[in-house]
Image (cartoon, rainbow, N blue to C red; front, side):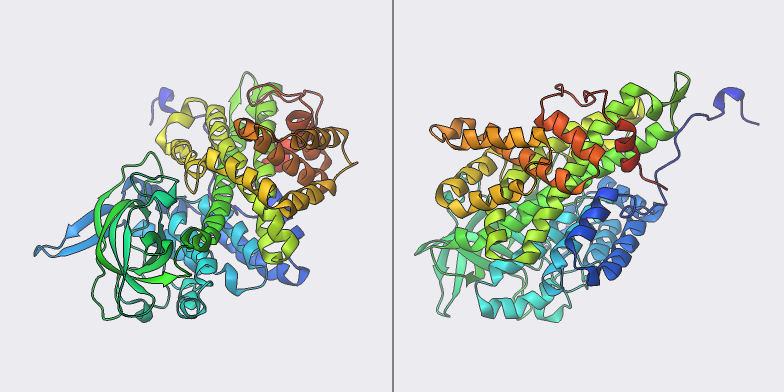
Length: 544
């Protein structure tokens, strides 16, 4: 018999065995709002199935194992032959295979594909975030390849396949392939026009060989990569296959894997090119323009990934406080803790609502929606990804010391939380992109204003925030120095307008009072006490 001091009481049951999709009321509502009614039954069934897998004990164990056993670089085989392979734990392959089979690279091949895929990405990323990198880049490669119809016809069916085959072999022998991307170099960083990798034309039209390096190349075991290099006509985009059609390995030397803060399951590499065979994508000198659509799609995935991390952190914190007792009652019933949880829930719902609205714009595909994305996507990428880390920190604190222990899963969320803000262009890059959109493409600003204008008159605090934003937009002298502040306001007004139109009244009221009305402190948990915070928290609770 255990000693009485070893009897375990007042410990929270694990958040396991639940449907991650149906437990997320904001995500369910967004899917129902943006999908054609004829697609809803099938989409709900698919997303619920994925949600149950995500919430299962088995998949949660896969996520833990993939992070506890990071990838290993194998530069040579036992005989001394150069192989440049990365070895992953089997759990990583299981996660990646499930993501592919769930259609997370297949948005382009089905109606409502972007909304369905975005919702699935939010759900499945809560199991483990690192393997989302190859899923994201594979999905995002399609629009870049479509600049060359012949390449698109060859590669798109493989990229949008729901079959995952690990291992390196000629792409035409695989039922499905994955893609990576190589843009960044040591001396340039985000300034990709400073790249020094050289592309030398070969005799066959459209083919070149590369000499140079890439400082960051994610998912180096992918079947192909889109890379930038200096051709005779300037910076150009190229398709680089890992294995050539005759079965030989392309020159793709992995020099080392990055030792990263988070994203531990995913390999990010430094690679060298020396006579590496590639095919041109698009025209010479237009590499940035060619690859920019891929970058835009991966930026949307940064927003989705941040929303997923936020949602999982909120789910864990609300779940913990629902069961944990202190000072004579459940934590969730304590007014101060309820304020904190409600504040976190608002941030999470605003992120999810905005992310799915952006995905719906891709499904629409019209000129107005493309203009809307041109400004709103970088603004969302700037703001949502920046809100992720402070939210995860506060959510961890809701668990007390338990949240600082690896077994809780919160430290892994925390290490992952800065990634989406840094990757695919950090904060200043996004803010400057918003400025370019406003200054060079008037239709982008008009589309944004029309979108937020749909909610005018519904909340006086939102109306006031729109008016203040218009005043600031009227004076763009010296705007670069205040670009972050301006972009923050753009994102908050957009989030507020969407919540006023679509969220329950208690959600919209709390968001507008705090984020737009100024009745808010400098930390989470400083919402006006007069709000209906109980309803806000209950909406965020993951029902198991």
